[in-house]
Image (cartoon, rainbow, N blue to C red; front, side, top):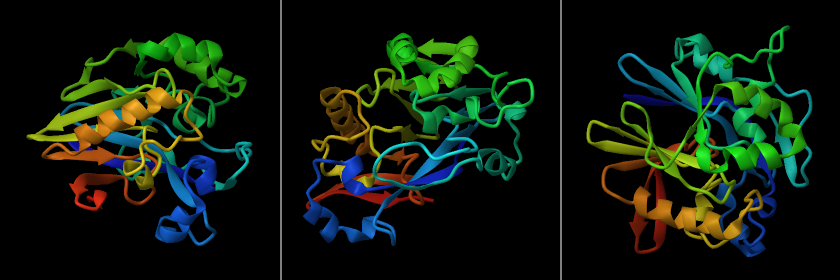
Length: 268
């Protein structure tokens, strides 16, 4: 099995908008985590998993943007490169077996409505969509009205999944609620190694050593912290890698527990 980051775009966000509990001096001491404008640069896109006779895309990015999302603390926002990124892997959406969604935020389901054809169909509407059952009903009834069109587009194809469900050979569901009720991570096992795609449980590497910091994007802080702490234990197990969709140019890595705290060691 192979795993490839499929980039759709990037988002600049002020570090203390994302992590309001983080002290300003932390960012003074860790300025290398910020771009030249003083923002955290987080990626948007998906994870392509390919087996011998199947392929699965986890999340679909922002999609083409008519306007940037409205949120204080945002800088430049780009999106819309997902299909060309897939093409560089020799694939079109019609070649995929299924899509899995970590949660219902716009930067993970954007292509379900953005980039639609003249008949109102998105490029993935022919595919089954896996999403956490624990929050699907709640998510579609309480989500931001701006997501209504995406949720309506997803609904006919949704296959709700619960913790431990196998959705493809070697790919199983890990329920990690808190960021949203339906937030789902995916555990990929192949050739004696493990990859955990943890979605928005972590937005940046600073959170590994500070799981107690509230994330400004989380819906329920207590559950989100519990999920981060669960994942810290899983990610430091032997022969285990992580995939952080928002980790910009270091999406794949290993989390190593050192005497000085957790260290994210990028992997190719």
